[in-house]
Length: 183
Image 1 (cartoon, rainbow, N blue to C red):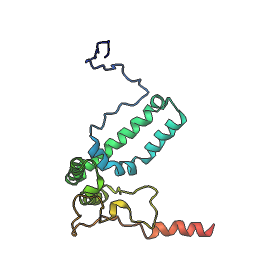
Image 2: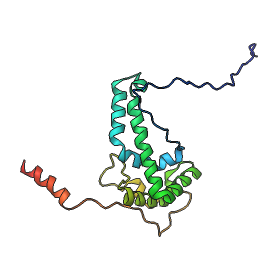
Image 3: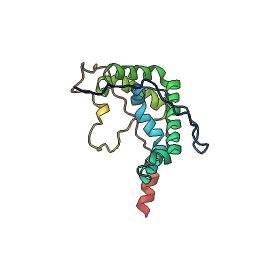
Image 4: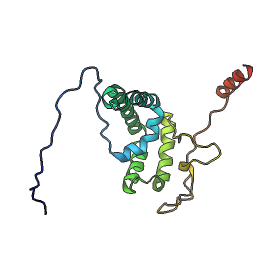
């Protein structure tokens, strides 16, 4: 048996030292994991440049990136706050249904595809953001657009259809092709 009597510190410590003025002030998101997971692809779509700057800073400052990259991290947080606020303004009902489903189903995305499709449609129509999985092979149906989920607790209703954003066609795509063929 142990001869030492265990001693536990029940006091919570807070560091009250203010951050330097060089680090921009930003309110935290105040969201749990389910709303963040629900909005993650939209945050990634709008905040990609800020995320890339933050990751580049962390790669350039190995071991001390947490301190050197606070400014970039605050920019990411500010951008994510704006996405969450815009989704709450434009698609609150769909957003709440999706993240509640995630919370009730242990964060398993495949359990909540019909609610996700409605959220994707609303966010695309109101904010112009679409869910895209990075490095998705072009000849494979993305997992979030499949109508049959192998591990789902219940089948997806036949009436539910995945939302597929329209592809850009027209003059915007013709100009770069014409420019590249002339060079």
